Length: 266
Image (cartoon, rainbow, N blue to C red; front, side, top):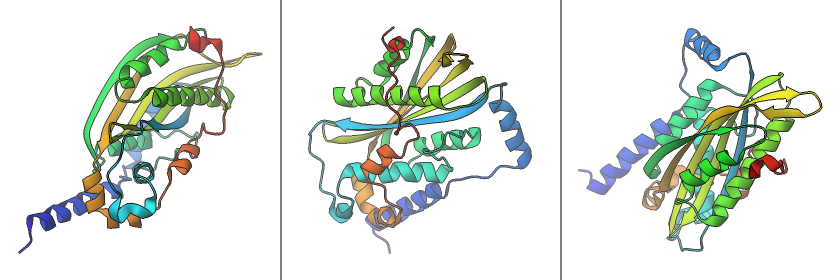
């Protein structure tokens, strides 16, 4: 007869296995409809950035996960598995609406997170005024992250902005933005996702610029469950590991400098 702890471990392992399998397949006719939904006459791209920061509050011991070196690297590995399970490539600028949607679903159902919350803010931006987007991000995550993490997120968003400016596409394009976040606050390690979509147009002599538009910035945040990670250490150790540095550098916007348009301050 199994003990309650054995039964819990068995259920968790089963739940993780189902989640990690991911990558659902849809019939060709459904995928065709998704392609039509994604296309509005503009080219589509994905722009990804990652940021990490936090306070110096202590974490519990890693126990059997000691070979990861830090809880941040455990979290980075879980974030990588989340993307892999959805078939979402954070280093690519190619956009796939289906994988974009599945990645969001995989994040909200991540077994190792607790207290997942979501919210959004809608603001108006233009090529001359991007500060409302930063204000929306600050409103959404300012109370969940430390000041240095918020500064890192803003810097990462400006790198995403530079990627969008330089990445060649059609005359008109949609830049679908994903911003990953790891932040340590009061002993908790929070994993987050920010996303939005920005319409851009190529103007001769000026390059790509944002159109006057309303955007919606959405967030998902949850707290890493240390105990569950330790209980399922064998599963985590078997995954392809990604340390914090690799996760940060693996985003498509990582090689770019922050965009320094004065519009960020207007």
